[in-house]
Amino acid sequence: MSFFARLFSRRSVHKLRDRVSDTPSIASYADLARAFVASNDIASAERILEEALDTFPASTELDRLRRLVRQHRLADRIQELRRRIDEEATPSLYHELCEIQLQCNDFHSASLTCSEWRRMFPADSGAELASIKIALRRFYTDRAAADGRAAFAGLENLLARDPGHARALRLLAELCSRIGALQKAQEALSRLSQIVPDDPGVATWRRRVDFALASSYQSMDLNRSLREVEETGQFPDPVQSVDEDAAERRAKKPAAPKAPRVLDAARPALGRLARVPGVRLVVLVRGSAALVRGARAGTAESVARATRSIAVTAKRTTRRMGMGSFQQVVVDTDSGSLVLQSGDPSCAAAVIDRLTSMPAVRSALADLASAPASQAAAGAEHSEGEVVRA
Amino acid sequence: MLETLKELNRTPGVRGSAVLMGDGVVMASLLAPGSDADSLAALVSSLASSIVKNVSRLDMGKPRRILVTSSRGCFSANYLGNAWLVTDLELEIDPGSLELEVESAAMRIRRLLRRRGAEVPAVLPSDDGSTAESSLDFSAGAPDANEGERP
Image (tube, rainbow over the protein chains, first blue to last red):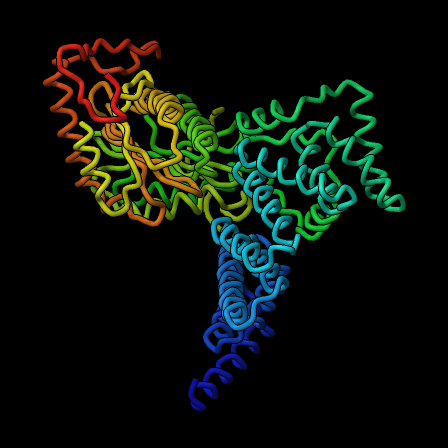
């Protein structure tokens, strides 16, 4: 960046900072963050967005910007680590690179990094644990039984060689606990409590598992539990696994503000999508409730049921095929297309005419399906769509 | 049929392809190594049957193509009357850019199926949701002798 460009950029940041102090709003924070990005100050952009989200926790725009900035920062760090590894590789560089790739949910690159790490440092056990962590993350994300089995086998192998590996025992206990294989979780926890007898978290966790097994909870064997998770897409987690990392993550994550009426909040976004030219019907399914816009009178419920049924079958199919988590299905027919987008916590679908702009619909559906209920409500009327049971 | 699949597999972005009967039986398969054609057939036919049934509830008529995208893969299933042409696509590729190639392969296979077994009722759900049995008789035409294909 030239001297003049830097000067103008600093002035612009200065002005925008004053604007944020005078009139803090979503727009002023977003503009300031963009100015930081433009001046290559990614850390400040991230910090200002964190601050903005404390003030406006429901803002989709700020959340999207924060994700982009974070991705940008991680991509920079990955590049830097790659450069340093090329110069002089060390296990700690591989470890950091693998962790960042996992943070980006880039399981493929993380696996490649692990293979390279093993090849370069065959005596280092860190690579083995990292590859187990990748399988576990894959399983927790995609819920495919094969990933769960691979992670379990990896942990068993590691523990066979090093029975006192506390981290591996923790991961094993968490896996078994989450899938409801409590006998296995109990075994792992009793071994773990011998290694770390003073850890209160482990003691509480073990007591919970003991209590669940002593009461009516029907513990399943590992394979059946994994199949059940694959089939339903749900983790029974009967005792709320208390792995310290997971608990810490949960504690750090701010609780999502609750919308008074979940589907009411999504009406404006649904209405906006329905007004896109060529869109005939829009459905948002969240849990057992659905919001339908554009259906013929009396057919909203069957439309909602059909949408939910397709989403459930597609999720199950992609999991069983080892294709990871389901994202989207497009069904082309003679009369138009059905586009169904899966999100967390909802799924959204639209029936569109043949010549409708697909990218615009896809992006609107992705926003609708992924937006927390309270975010979709941002300042609009409440008169869109029909609420039905799905 | 395998020739058509081979040609389709040569298209950049296509990892493998297979022709599946509506009831989940594999007719011809040239999938990428490591893919299990039988389990793929069972899963895809169950998904396709659910989609066909549910799309009819939305008054959209018969599906021509189903495109499923997930975090680790993407596949399309083109409707062939009583069977499906399933194409395993690379995740990075825009499926729209391959539509012509896949549709042209589907047309050739559709013609081949007609020549072999004449017109047959589609394996589509009836109004009550049950699926009709396929009545396609493949004994009329000699099956290709290539590996991977099942009579």
